Amino acid sequence: MNQVVIVGAGQAGCWAAKTLRQYDFTGKVILLGDEPHPPYDRPPLSKKVLVGDAEPETTWYLSLDELAGLDIDFRPGLKAVSIDRTAQQLDIEGAAGLSYDKLIVATGARPRLLNVPGSEQAPIYYLRGIDDCLALQKALVPGRRIIVVGGGLIGLEVAAAARKLGCEAVVMEVAERVLARVAGPEVSRFVTDMHKGHGVDVVCGVMPDKIETGAQGCRIACKDGTLVEGDVIVAGIGVIPNSELASAAGLACEGGIWVDEFTRTEDANIHAAGDVTNHINPRLGRRMRLETWQNAQNQAIAAAKIICGREEPYDDTPWGWSDQYDCNLQMLGIPDSFDDAVMRGNPDDGAFSLFYLRDGKVNAMAAINAVRDVAVSRRLVASGTLVDAGMLADVEVPMKQLMSRD
Image 1 (cartoon, one colour):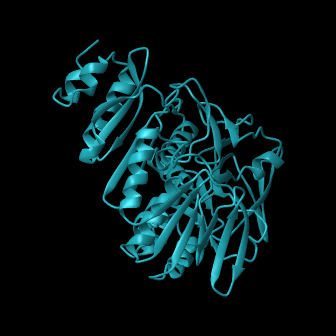
Image 2 (cartoon, rainbow, N blue to C red):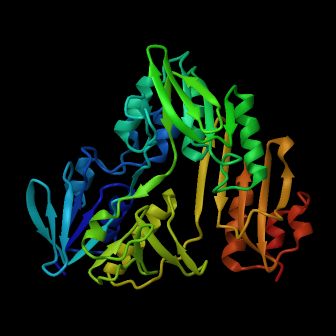
């Protein structure tokens, strides 16, 4: 094998390239990115860079010199337009095509656009990359009222950042509660109360119908008649996997590029990793597409190791986190439902965990300011240890003690 080409120079693409070298791949590694920046970490954009606590350069995984030192041929600002699977060639817009022995597609995802009448004229911002972050940063002028459409993790982190920068903020969510897709109602209540305590208006159960923009700002009219006024709109309403390149090449794509537990597509010479994939998780026994930092990193590492001959399935337990104000939220696993959670701790004390059991075993959990609970829960989920719900809820029982039960 002489050449591996990686399409997408984000977190997944960078980790794939690094791991190839770590596992002694001596052929040529080409890392192709459509942005002008070196590979960078996205989570700090909403958590640190947006509020001025860090410079964009601090998010870089590798500098240009470090990439060169690893003998990674990094080519920024280029867009892959098609894959010729028969010839094993990647066609590049405005540049010569690239042949490959193995191809890794790590094209990530893009923000879903707020597409309602009036949206084209409205001051709408999105937060995905460095350039998005810097543009939004300039818009978060103290005293401005920021309308955040979407009560998911990104929207709530932007609302927290806006308040820190001296802006007013209102969060609009189409569901009946914030974080409805990723967390249970107990977490939603805590997070909603936290934001309200910091002066954020939270409006749930509303669907934007149109946007009116004028000299005095903008106004979102909702289908139920609710009107929300502000100066700037930030939309955080989900992402769309950038699977078009793979789909056009005839690869199976539905909710992302379909890969098996070995990160392979139906073409054995093409792997995929990160937000763009719809993958089989052997641990959970079903397909899923994850939009997490951990998945982008570890699935890419798995792909590179497999290309290097280490045939190990990718079966990580899903994990993600969010920092808002002085609150740390972590989520481990994917529960069958958010019903019948076992609570450890008290939300009134500002720290608690929720555990979701299946057949007496911890299947998933969420934690607010309870980092130690997460650490032990990783072991409980991985080991499949039977737990006593009463002991799990009892804060007087050390979590480690639960590991000794069979």
